[in-house]
Length: 194
Image (cartoon, rainbow, N blue to C red):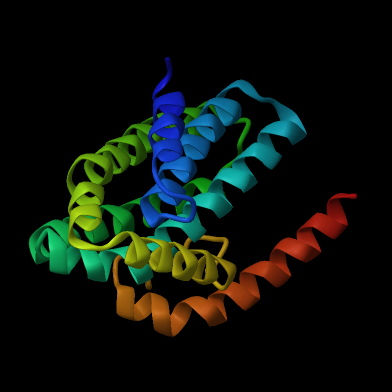
């Protein structure tokens, strides 16, 4: 069984709408998309990378806005800040990847290194952060966090913004405005690809 399948199985054991279940499902999809980008070519590779980039940008922003403050309370400030630092670094790498030629061997090499960092980050969250968040909140609070996470994702940027990454405060301040620009840019790019 793949790690993505294991994450989906774990998510299915949790109550519907539980914030950790939502994040585990997203971790599984991120793993799937890395595999897809690495094996695809041409337009399909670009589409898979665009989906991966958008999912990572939205996912990390929402985590920083909704999960990280709770994690700070339940597992400690040092652990929460370590995850924020990892996300800030990932955001910088994602911004570099976004500007690269997807057909280059340099892109493939940097994507492989980036995948390892993202997977290590997800595993830290799954081992250290998520259990603490789960233990520190009631089932109702976890569902409420899931609802808030989904709402934050709807206004989160779809492209990396390294200046805001790693800071929940900056995400709340800059995120919605950056999202408007990103989503407009995505719509224009999509329209011009047809």
